[in-house]
Length: 305
Image (cartoon, rainbow, N blue to C red; front, top):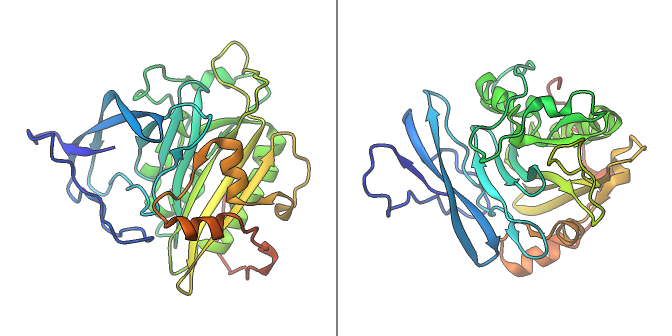
């Protein structure tokens, strides 16, 4: 994805992203408000991209589109469908038109800047060729589950960014039990452990599908069979990864019940996570199952969804 100012008439010169390894740049590539054209791509496979469509993003003062992480956005490495990358103020969605929802969503966890009070309502993302209406979920028995949590986006980027987290490109169908208890517990665990950190944690969340397709009513939204969350963080100069895989019909509220490995998430999703990290480091970290009981919970600000 490349961002170009609307008055730039040299579209063959993309704005480069910072190359500082394995850290999140503190200054986004656009430090002035204005109108930007976003080139959205479909990833057909790991080696090629084809142009999909254009969208326009209006950046007002203080609202800057988030950058991709230095460790890289997920790449297709297997069977998964193509995705279109949609960048918002506090998150990036790898949207799957085939599944009617994001295949993955990237956001960051770091020290909060704002008091996060839930603000926003679910809205269709008009950047998509076939926008999903929030009304599709009415009386379906499923919640509209955030992949990038509304609370965390609001705490780091403010209320305007939090409202963008209600775009349907950040939403997957989840059972009420999963969304309101289990998934929320995992989100809260992540917030408690990383929101007061001196470094930024890179987080990807999304659905998992098997070959038995079921859909939300008469819509094109496929019901996920599970959900994943993978986290990359730096502790005392060393990289670590944590992964969770949660079945859609999970019943245990214990976060530790769902700890997995990034290798497992890659196997069941068809994506290669953190591709910019050297391969030998990837292989070591992605195979490791972190013992989350070893984490020291820091006192974090109160978290409301």
